[in-house]
Image (cartoon, rainbow, N blue to C red; front, side, top):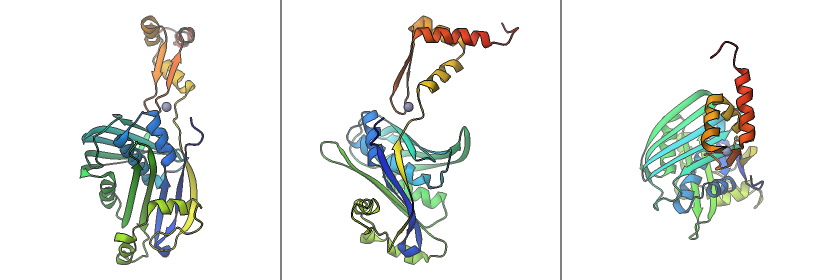
Length: 289
Ligand SMILES: [Zn+2]
């Protein structure tokens, strides 16, 4: 785990107190996802946009809750899964490593919120030859009956380096006038995301604005972190049962497990597997065959 893989997440009021916002700078965790899965070119851009989308949608995810974004691209073909947890940790997986150029795609997008293994919310939408930003706009209009505007931007240079990954979601507050809200965020008055992130991060002082003055009410760091680990892998192996483990020992000599999310390889050697088999066999209730 790279300790520098930290992004920032801000929430607050904007448009002179007429709207709330969520702003995300996810360059560091997006770079970590790119490196872990060996993503190049457009695949790294689309993966970063997916991570931004999941982070923007996670505004109401608290504590042990988790938001999962799954995208199945049909044209071009790809698959993306991003998890965001209430503590600001995120992880993502994108395949394949390379994609044809272009930000638009056709496919489906699924957002689900869960607490441990219990699903709390699920919503599915089609993506019809749109960018992820366009699809997200449509998704917000249909899934949330609130006037909102959203921007998602990931950029890379010609060499394929990811340079920027930022997103902004602005939602009108109930008391605000809808026409005034749209006018504040229309056309060339739309916020410059790069400038905004610098302002929010304190790099250029308190100059940040979104459709008028803004006030930061909360901030959180975002970190690429996977929930896998040696203990979890051992737990999964134990859950296979002693017969299955016996078969693994006989066929492979040891167990090799790869975490699809963070691409970490785990190896459990024969000695330890043998000990697990013995322990599991002893745990069997008396009288069982
Ligand atoms: Zn992992």
